[in-house]
Length: 213
Image 1: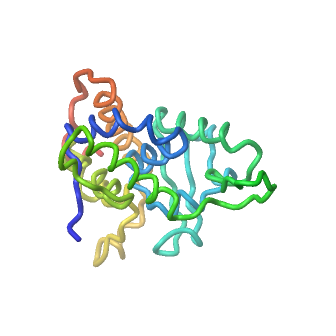
Image 2: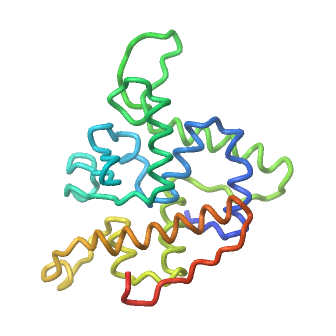
Image 3: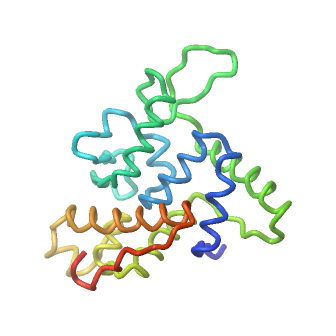
């Protein structure tokens, strides 16, 4: 299946439809889109991995695809979304706890299929008023993030590191720098664009010059 890269216009339509998904599901979509994280990394996340003071979300080795710890810098907007999830999670250890239908006290992360099911309902609703609105998966949100980082002038190396992609070859051998500062700048720029797309305002942030992030 070919990956879907959502355009600015499509993203604006997505934001219009998100409220009908329920706040928790809508926040999941927003966070995946803004951070480029994998759905499994978000579903397995625990609150001990989120540092609100440092505005960082740490993905431990056991949750990372490449088996290495990875720190995602959180733009203020995204940190706010995590704060909302924290309130919704009550006292659970998990960012996205499972909701027991019988009110049983079981502290487990939600199933990976939960968002997929929610997205199917989302697309069904979207296509009632918008014929042929393109179907997208959680992974397509990751691909969309990567595509837009490039269009914002983010250096290829930084954009790849934002998604925790292995750099490969000599770059992987000789370049051990994690580019946290540069990645933070890039993801803050991307979050600013997302915010403008949702609000309907103009996007006045100047794209980064190559090599500056």
